[in-house]
Amino acid sequence: MEASTGEVKASYDEWHLRRAQTEQAGEQSFQPWHRTVISRLPDLNGLKVLEVGCGRGDFAIWLARKYPQAQITAVDFSDSAVAVAKERMSQENAQSLTLPAGTFDLVFSCECLEHVPEPIEMAREMARVLKPGGHFILTTENYFNGQVLGWVMAWLRQRKFDSGSGTQPHENFFLFWRVKRTLENGGLKVEHMQSNHFQWLLLPRVSPSALCTEDFKSPFWRRVFRPFGRHFTFQGSKRAG
Image 1 (tube, one colour):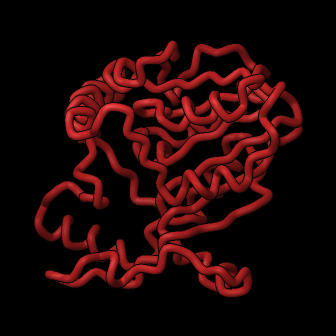
Image 2 (cartoon, rainbow, N blue to C red; image 1 turned 60 degrees about the vertical axis):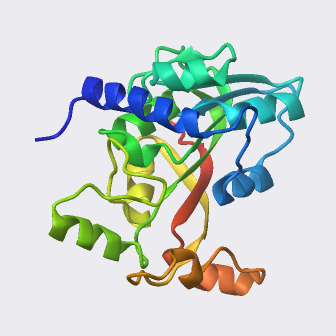
């Protein structure tokens, strides 16, 4: 039986509190997907920007400091995550934002879509709050790689899948073409895709990092192996009409 949004929210409140207790004060840990998003960002000064699924707020705070003239709103449906951020952030459900339609020039979301029970509703909300001609950047998981073995083992053992950062309250099994279709069905136009963190294989008693290529310097090889990257970045605009 699928968990309700309320149950997932309560589970994430507890999860974020546990994670926060293991972090050092002021710690900022940027992941490969953050670096990809940074490389794709325009100058945000003067723009209205929304982060959906801000977690404990590190990336939004970094962006606010880097672009002091930008109006940055960061939302997350976990009360605990927002409290840990220690910034004035809104609490919102990514599947049902109360923000006005047509408000933002740019909406971005990092590794959130795979954790919401209804991804299509999140995509629709992102499209709704974007201005006409507004843009989005979204990163999420893609398991068209060695990580699929982890899903198989979790299924065989009747356990929740652990993506490597601990078992989360909710995890969607995503393949990049399914994510692209979800975004497009939600009213977004995907104009650019790229990936990183190429997990070739998972073996018992072998560190996953030993069988992983984080990224390729060559644009040619990056494009050849793009379908197999674990962390996918989708970029585009609000679809007209």
